[in-house]
Length: 348
Image (cartoon, rainbow, N blue to C red):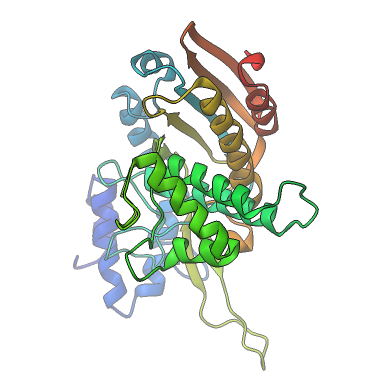
């Protein structure tokens, strides 16, 4: 550690400076290194207020110069088979986004997830996949629990569940002799008849024998990372029930409200699928994206309202490749995306 904390300002690299500052968590000056004193901001809080914006803008510019900031949907859709489609739009956060980083040593106990090389806040492809799958599973369960649905049958539940596994890949917890996690949850939700019918659909599609375990397979959806150029701080201060005073504030690094990010999703059908199946998947995924972005949220603490976006988007593009050629339409809201997807090829 430095002899005096003021020596940290002599370090040119912003990230190295923050890592040196993180050593303070093992000293009596932990709180001062995080937020400074009552009279004056210092440490990490000072970095957020004075230095973070320039640091993130520089790294954001490097990502853009290297062509990593967002995928160019116009260039690569032609490389994929008919039935492929791409959804891309820039969204604005309505509430702060919180997630958990992989780093083991940081000045804040709850850092937001950052890209490993450029150190900018981001949503990893695996996070998008998990958030969208969770949103579409919730939609499936809500549909099943609505007793007014005329087509509410175990066979239809199994069919919809099967379509989701084709989108995202095999379900977690599908182990021979011991179901758990998502597979067990959906078995219990739909009932034994729906579970048996679902596994018959999987085995029939992948030509697996009845005495074999379900195959492992990759889904048709491919997600791209989302980068943010802003970073902020959320504070939760639990209050004592007797005194009503908060003593131990908990700090959460976040991507603040009104920050923007670009969402990109690629769908590539398996061989032998028709354009009609791809259009059905598009309609289902569009509804799932709308629910994830505006209702259920993504990231951590979504039950408290974090990680939701506005309905209005910028640069919305929907590209669908048919045998006759590529079709493209724009949209300015996520609700409009649903309308475009519902129309199938007519929307183009």
